[in-house]
Amino acid sequence: AVDVRKLRATTGYITYDEGFGNTGSCQSEITYIDGEVGILRYRGYPIEQLAAKSNFIDVSYLVIYGELPTPTQRKEFSQRLTKEAPIREGLVRFIQGFPRDAHPMAVLSSSLNAMGAYYPHIASNNHKRDLEHFDEAAAIALSKVRTIAAHSYRVARGLPLNYPKPTLGYSENFLHLMFSEPYNEYVPTPEVAAAINLFLLLHAEHEQNCSTSTVRMVASAGANLFASASAGVSALWGPLHGGANQAVLEMLAAIHADGDDGSKFIENAKNGKARLMGFGHRVYKNYDPRAKIIKGSFDKALDSLGITNDPFLDIARNLEAAALSDDYFISRKLYPNVDFYSGLIMNALKIPVDMFTVMFAIGRMPGWIAQWHEVAKNPKSKINRPRQIYVGPTPRDVPDAV
Ligand code: ACO
Image (cartoon, rainbow, N blue to C red; front, side):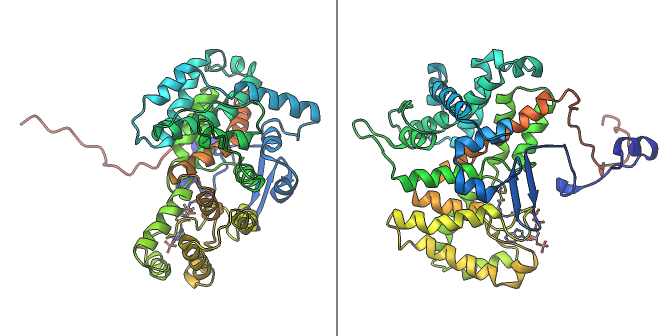
């Protein structure tokens, strides 16, 4: 490998790679992706096998600790998650203080950062000290992210809050926190719980995407896990990243309202007047393996929910068919990504559109925790500090006062 620091010192050259399309920013043992052939592996295990044989909690353990859990480790991990599910009353009041129309990603990002105030012993901004309590910090982040998300949803709608139930699994508890009403507990069908579980598992980690690179960037300065994860949420909120699943539904709604069956929109996308949300990926240039898996379970989930006829689905299928047979999309290797189908599934599951990206954030938490840990535990970690190519004015004098 070229020692770019030496190169800069001796030649003055700076590597310019707009959007970091070909810049390796770190070494990591967590996730392997080969975008040309559509491979995704967490800690060496193919995503297809994990999706078929595992679940979100075991995969979270795998991503964070490097191995699938033994029965004892699984039990201890689940117990820690159960213990950490409720959030402090002060934080509940903090969430209740946001305006009703606050976007839940704003609430989530702020609340995660605020956790540093509630757990100073694991948010000391001294990696060595913070790592002494890493198991606790990881469980707090993974378990409470779901509680904060559900509380923000209920507060925004003026609904009474639900409290986590120690008897429920991770996905079931999330659905209970979101949808149970007084005297009417929400019990999801096994298919619905399985769809949420699959969604979270497929989003658990994805190497140096925008939000994860942000987490590592913030961690590289020595910041604690909560501050770093909060920054990750902010990055994820963007419509070109995690916000794409919300943007997919908004796009479908706009196409529907326009009386279009999708063909006019496809033309606009080709003319640069619109962007086909849920299509394209910086790394996957043949297909997104997560999209393939989620599409496979898509019809099953819709069947179990009794959804056969939905105008958004028809438009989505038209867009998919048109794009997959059109030269514009084929030549640019623009295929449906995971967000295209996940937006549709969540819509079918009655998850409100503004919660889509929050769901992504819950799923991605194990990845952020693991990536923060990789930075924090490495004594040779350096602060991330890219350079730039200056294109501003050449030297000039400040004019005399007139
Ligand atoms: N619709 C129409 N045209 C597109 C799309 C799209 N969704 N995506 C890329 N293109 C076109 C560009 O206009 C460009 O065309 P040109 O060569 O004629 O100028 C070409 O394809 C290459 O596009 P880039 O923007 O350079 O590709 P990049 O790798 O930078 O962007 C991205 C990838 C951001 C995902 C992009 O494809 C996009 O905006 N997609 C829609 C948003 C989306 O679905 N994001 C989710 C990403 S996956 C995730 O976060 C889980």
